[in-house]
Image 1 (cartoon, rainbow, N blue to C red):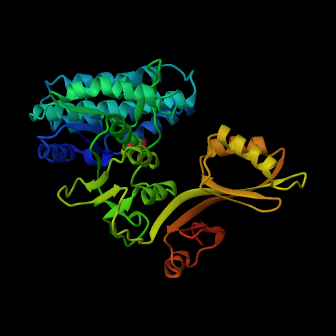
Image 2 (image 1 turned 180 degrees about the vertical axis):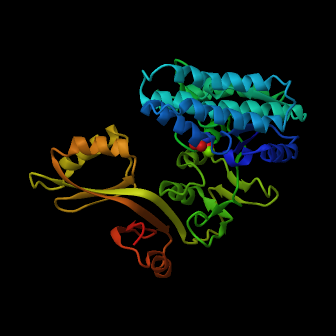
Image 3 (image 1 turned 45 degrees about the vertical axis):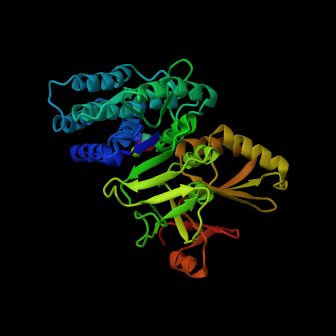
Length: 421
Ligand code: ASP
Ligand code: MG
């Protein structure tokens, strides 16, 4: 059995759906578990609804109407309007209407998950109907029934034993008659409340299912030819990487390469399941393969850029050293506020770290630390990480850049730089 994951870009319009259908047709003889994200940029749009709702801007309903219309317009190009899927999509979105009708009474993260997860509910209903109409039998399944997580909303932690048991009980039986089609990115708590697993988490869903079902492989279908050594959004030149070890892949994602979700690699490595990253536009091309034993490992310099970074330096007001006690305090507060380091460094009486500028979380953190520490903050920074660096590559990418913090190991250099000089 193979696990396939199609991201939002692959189903951003009606032609995307047709293309996914064509790709799947060529795997007719195989058992497939198919995982799908929300359409195009729907998750971003749903996030905006959550913001409008919490900030009481009065725009949330209108934003929702726009999303509903986009879905409906795509569906009308694919399926006759008499099909029951039109009602099913409406029913999915009605759950958001219900939330918006009342003022917010639950936590932001909880409401976020209830609203944002609807994107995947709608997309999977649409693809399921379309594939079945085109005589590719798939069974729509609700991921919340088998992917179980704790109640850390927006970052659900997988309850592995329960998830594995559910997957093994439910999925092979369905595969006897049809493919399985389900939502990426979402899970359910023990009480059956919806959680999400972190942005771009559908890749992780694919890895979870592959692990639990001991799949033969996972394929992530993308709008790029495979894994490139530099993100085409930020760098003018890229090379396709043919093969990567799990180790290299996990390093790249740890430093912020967004091509696959950082949590995807571990479950696959643990069961030795190969991961293929392929282009949905050129499905016959090889793409990138990730597995344990790459014979001729080639170490091309890999560039990863993280934008909108904040650099924070903390100095104890009582002039005490940055020792284990201070570090313990800082790490504890950071974990509480769910702030992840992208890089950190310490000196005698200062501790500096670079993180994504999630304003609400960062402000809460600093409020808590400002009694004990003097705080310096720099905003709007870039964090550039280069794996397998050499001087030429470093020079090209730091020209005219002011570097605020730097760290080098044998394989990796990280540079925190002012975005524009
Ligand atoms: N739709 C979700 C997101 O955009 C999950 C995913 O695409 O993997 O973050
Ligand atoms: Mg997406």
